[in-house]
Length: 96
Image 1 (cartoon, rainbow, N blue to C red):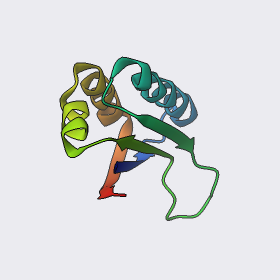
Image 2 (tube, helix red, strand yellow; image 1 turned 90 degrees about the vertical axis):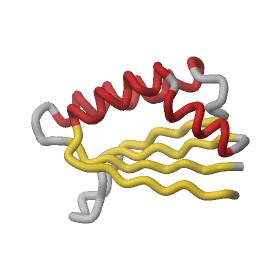
Image 3 (cartoon, helix red, strand yellow; image 1 turned 180 degrees about the horizontal axis):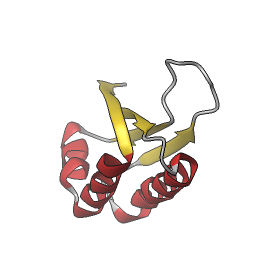
């Protein structure tokens, strides 16, 4: 199993609204992309300076499935939105 984790730091303008919107759009991908086995989307409540605003934890059966997800048109729509609304992101992928 492949685990894909991404964390996002959102821009301050309309931050709460944008986080909620992105969370909804990300969660919808589970029904739209067959290769996406599971996705959890979490909104941060920790006020640490090191904290990010939103994270995703998703799983895939294989590297090929992760690669297909990465370029899937529905995923790319969400990626474009996220790029507009965030300052930075971090990713980690590993085999479980």
